[in-house]
Length: 304
Ligand code: PSU
Ligand code: MN
Image (tube, rainbow, N blue to C red):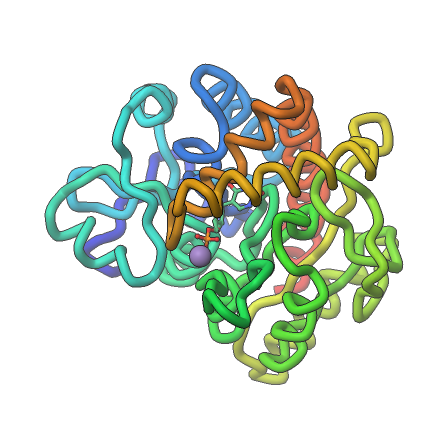
């Protein structure tokens, strides 16, 4: 076992018993939502996963270890902590070595999940190719990780703060399947539809699990995106969200925001400009992803 990994009691028991485990990221906790909603949501998401027959493993860096599963106290103190580093692939070794607290992005959570032999991972949205990337070269490390690391990511698509057409092109180049869960088109986090078709549609967790198993058995490296639209009742109006995103992008540009600060800045700005409505939507979609992700993990586990 890797010396840097520290499993929670719940997760190590689940592993011993061969039960399905679902990874969860922590950037959404430290940089995606404010306290206390971040901790409340993380707890509820974990419970939804348990209620659907799988075991949650929230992944975060602390005390020089990669925690695979947090105790309730750890979750609380992590969610309250200020100045937690946002950790992607490049940051991981330094933050572990210097014993800082680190919140793992989709990319870093995929790496840690693979080290811990966890095949399914639930989050809100993935990073992607940013608008204007042809000049800024801002392309999330999440896409590169999806290209090489064998973990399925259940998400509500990607936010339209990104260039979703270029994001789909990039995933195609890298051979990453994008499976729409009960949808023919890529969802855009706050909204259920975009003009971009997904590669395949699945209406049952079984179909997703069978595809993941076939991918594994064929030795095809890399991840998969399972895009699950936000529940209708929580979806925001298309016109409202696109106006908000345009304004937020202008403010990011005017403020000279670059690098890893872009995504957290945009998330916070969108929340401010929607008067908190985006936060309710965010919470609802993550919970829905937890339900679908647990169902997929259970089916996949039964195929081993
Ligand atoms: N998109 C969201 N919410 C998030 C993130 C993305 O809707 O919390 C986080 C995820 O952790 C993702 C990261 O991996 O932001 C991407 O950051 P960047 O664009 O700097 O790669
Ligand atoms: Mn970036």
